[in-house]
Length: 408
Image (cartoon, rainbow, N blue to C red; front, top):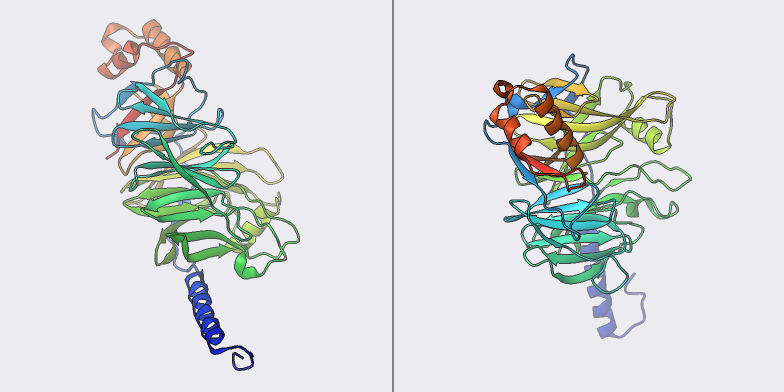
């Protein structure tokens, strides 16, 4: 083929060099096939307990209460995501499109980043990730701009655009130094070649090491599956990934993609994974549907949050499950969140590290319990833990209280 080109020798050398580079780039972007055989099945079935007690799972004496300081600059509405740095908590409020930083005692430090259209300003936060190896908070906005902020100073360092052919970056996750993962949950152009229609890319220094999870179904419409801000997480130094609609948890590394868990719910009908995903992406209401919202794990346990829509219904009900990995048994599956029995307090967990978990409880809920304890309990019934709640100086309009706990 090259011999047929009528070109000078130097041009021939250039052609060969270009062909070599193209071949190398193609090899680096080959798709990763996933082995779906011999899956580790996590069966989430019904259990008798309505509330999941985590008292027995918590390291005794490890619960700490941290009221987040409320100022005119730090007042926020909701806790969408929490990151733990060496000296602070970084909290994302999706309601106000803002990121706040507090020290380990709850004192307000600063707001990180500004919303706007100027340089180093974001326009609607799409996703964000704590890059521990670089000491930065990486914010990706809807215009595909990735802005890096120094978490020790809050200063915006630089920005760049993450732009790929037929690939929207809906999720970004920093792994280590220049390694990162991007996820695409929107199929832009159905007429494009199949090998450009992947949902996931693993990159190093902006070079695609591999891409995987292709859009397998030839549907004559754009696909926009469900997504969550918690679909990529780190545990034991490894990167994990899941999608809400197919109940598979993947292990991602530089060598490729492995399926770590397949989560099966009691009401799930026995159909193939391929058929299930196809029905969900089509919005079919002909089967019971579960959407995975959060996966958290320790050495012994899996904590799951998922929503459930019964056949023919569009309304989804949120549920929580606790699974014992050692004994392969579901310990709880209910509409109630994880429950600290001694406090009588229902909490919504976030995982900060392999053992450290945190719940962000609204101030008005804490005040309600303070009143209930004072009115209903005698002096003898007030334990040291309950006394800590009573002693919290907080008003209903204040920021949430963080409840930290270590799990065995």
